[in-house]
Length: 251
Image 1 (tube, rainbow, N blue to C red):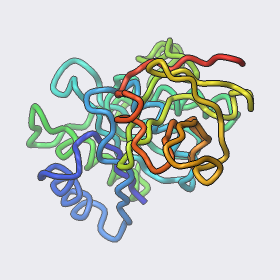
Image 2 (cartoon, rainbow, N blue to C red):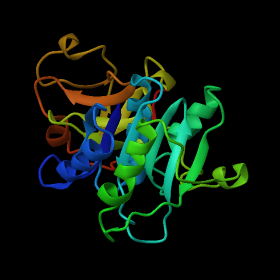
Image 3 (cartoon, one colour):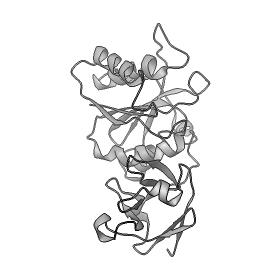
């Protein structure tokens, strides 16, 4: 399957145009809309979300990832093999965390190809459609990446190599107003308190553990620490925003 992970937003023509290319170049391959509202222009926050979602997908899945504020600039287009899955997108740190965790899990050292192929028509501002989607389709058909593999020393110094293993910030606000952090819950003590926007939040197993209006944090379905208000909207009720710092106290 090919999985779409973008900051395009659910409206507008961009997803449809990419899907049209995939249907043309990889007919019969399932295309999954995973996330179309990744943090806009924010490859770092998006990297932690991608790393949380990717393990749910089977080996050989191709992730077509476009969070690319540097489109048309000097950043390189990449195809990455990590943890048995493929990732296609820009060299801006978006794949840094999936690569690091794949290496830590001893799934084999990640491999990176710099895409050398170019289509006859390459828009300066829509590489998702013109460059990344055709390459993702090739990989889904079982073909090799159209480019040169980077040597290991260059892989170790790619964008995002100096980012922390977990990001103590709000990286996503969902439809319900819940605020997802870049912290894996498994790295936090059961009694840990998260401090965000001046609020100290204790852990709960889920919404039914607390009365209406109570704020808390919990381990979400993808393993990240998420801040919520029971029957409320945490972002609005607690004054949380994308990028807001989260402090771990009482750990």
